[in-house]
Image (cartoon, rainbow, N blue to C red; front, top):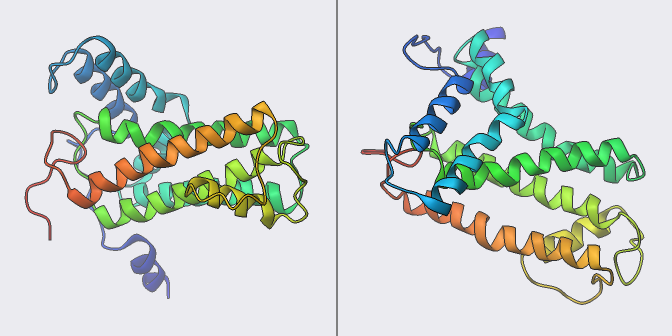
Length: 236
């Protein structure tokens, strides 16, 4: 039974390649590669944005969780990040379902995790010069879907703060419904923001999903050849 679950969760056995750098060191080397123009001859605002994106990942726990898993064993890298991404999806749902929106600490912590996801996607696209391709593009697409769910649920929590809508939400599912139709630019008109904060939230969510999410999907679906995360030669 133990071997069954190990095969199901971890897949094949990995042999640690000591030549491969850990996640934190790899991120630092990536920042240096951008600074030294090792792969891209960029400057000005492009270089500044790429440096900020690459450096931003050091401000969030995801990369350190991956580093801890890397220190334990190479086979735990992916499963640790899978659990972390799932936890970030469940967290805002727990806040909504249990009506914990009045907890300032929980909302701030959720927003902190939200910023990690917000910066992570454009970082992969624009600032992953020295990163190798993912072991599985299908897994990356699946994690992207969970990132999408996290954004939906996190914005749902933010919409419930104060009286931002034309009428109050009567059920915990109502803000999720509004967040989904907002992210898809549908807008049925039953709920709409009436405050400046609410309008800013709707605008940010709409811009994020229309620009970063769609762009990220296009990168994966087209599998563009470029130096860094999306570089690949032959993939079955």
